[in-house]
Amino acid sequence: MTTFNKREEGFEQQFAHDEEFKFKTIARRNKLLGLWAAEKLGLTGARADSYPLSLVMSGFEDAGEHDVASQNPQGLRCQGRGRARPSDQPRYERADG
Image (cartoon, rainbow, N blue to C red; front, side, top):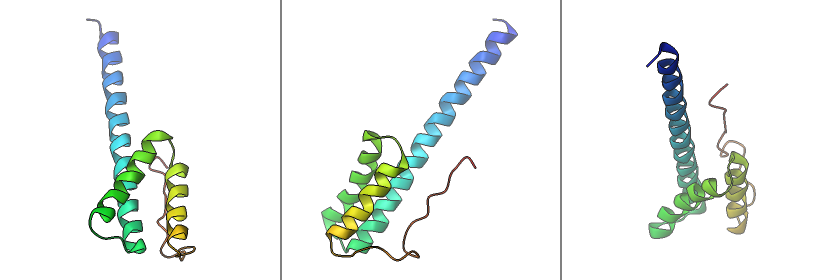
């Protein structure tokens, strides 16, 4: 195997590792957002456990944080909570910048 082939294989492995890390990070973020929202909604028991899972799964359906972020305030409004205070809203920060 030439040096170029080894280098190319190394870049491919690094890319796969970076993508897996990014995927796991986003899934964890969505789960934590769901746990926060379930607490704000006053959910308990099985409903509190299933709400974060629904946010994680919605992240799989449409890629991007806007899908998950738009689902959460709708859930809060449906429960009569209105808009959350700015101090209560989770902050999305870019991991790459």
